[in-house]
Every structure is written in C-alpha cells, then in structure tokens.
Length: 137
Image 1: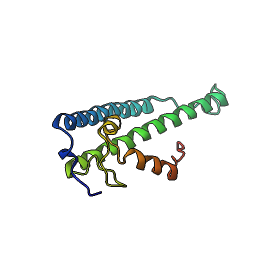
Image 2: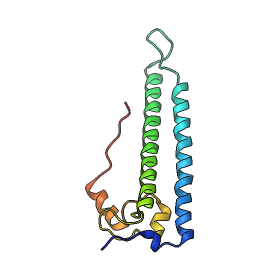
Image 3: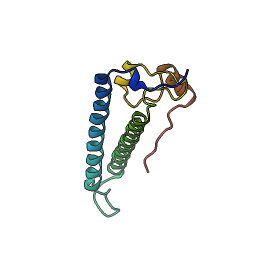
Image 4: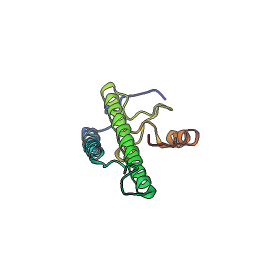
C-alpha cells in the first residue's frame, strides 16, 4: 500500500486531539522524571559496615533504587517515542504503519498516540521481538 499523509484522512479535531494527547502524556512523563530525579538525590545511602542496619535493609534499598531506575528508563523511552511521533506528524508519516505502510486506525492512535505499527504488524513484531529484561545498574 502506498504511503499517504494521515492529515488527509483525519479530520482537524481528530488531529488536534492526538496532538493534545501527546502533549498531555509528555507533561506527565516529564513530571515523573523530575520527581524520580529529586527522589534519587534524597535517597539515603545504604548503611555502612559500622552502622546499624542489616542485609535485608540494604537489599530492600537496592531493590527500590533498581525499580525507580527501571521506571525512569521506561518514562524516558516513552518521551523519545513521543518526540518521534511529533517528527512523523511534521513529515506526514504519522499514523502510517512502519512495517506495512497501511493506515493505523484512529482508535489505535487514540489509545496509543505514539504507535508505530497497526495492530496486526505490532502483534507480529511482538512475537519476534520479546521485551528485553532490564536490570538496574
């Protein structure tokens, strides 16, 4: 299927609504990243060898720090996806599946405004590209 500009198939209110969804999600994510950065600066260090505390306390702290790192990484990846969606909006490829070249249905874009693929191609992609495990550093 030949690629077309989705601005031609979405009405102006749909287009604005998708832009607003991207703006809103970006604002939420930026706030979460700022909060994670602030919490990271406030996180107490694990007890030293001559301080009260035990291995469970230390392990719990490492676990919490690791989870915060994973959450922040996920938020940053979603921010990059939003930036890429805006670039596609600017160049006329937004809403066009990167795999088959077909239009991504409006309902999917409403649910996932930064979607790269139609549902069928996304399902196929997920079968061959399982999510990679992430470990905190």
